[in-house]
Length: 330
Image 1 (cartoon, rainbow, N blue to C red):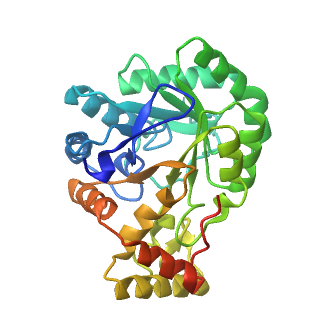
Image 2: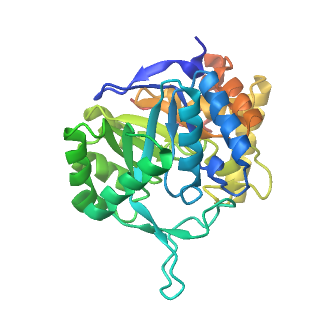
């Protein structure tokens, strides 16, 4: 079995997910429009390739990603593990009552009649789940992540967690977690909530290993699975040139130089930067799966090839010995 389709059990619950998972922000039109047919082809190609874990969110295309994913997975007729997110609801736009648009504002494809609004309340969580089930056209999903609560983690702990725990105890959900961007609120979440899994973006990559300092240790104490997103740090680790982005902002000259040094070292070992970037997170025993987004079958095929490529241990040793990448802390 190819590495990308190998199954790994989530320790605390009766679910196994593939080492490589498909995220659907790009299929919701993140930055670039995607046709419905292309989205469907990409999802079905992932299913055919043996990928069994798919993640989405109401934010992605303001519901479009969920609709596209549900439609394709239902057509596939094959088993899958599905996660979506809570913490935002999609409100109908009222011209007479302007609302704050809490989204990234970066989706080329979106429902123009709605806008995403943060809502971590009990009613908001229940509504979010009900709406997601409808858009996905499924009777249940496996995992619910509290989404982007980095700046409002106290509110998520106080208001959102309890209702998700109830749904888990009732068997409505198998697992609950958080989908975050920064370590400090993620650590607080793991310590103060009984989480089965977390999704953390950008904090365990070739350029940023901060998640292993404390977050991974807390997850291992509580047997909480870790899914890593943002392996390219939004682009710099795919193509480290002037103008590249790091976490969706212009990368500093220092970061670009470091990424270029990593790329040069890898070139000496005939290893593509993208392959090292997508494989790096699984070097840590706390990490269960790597989540990457693809907007086309070609991108998906390239990601799978990079993930399955054999990278000698000497490559990782050289990166650590150079000081460009921190050693794995267990």
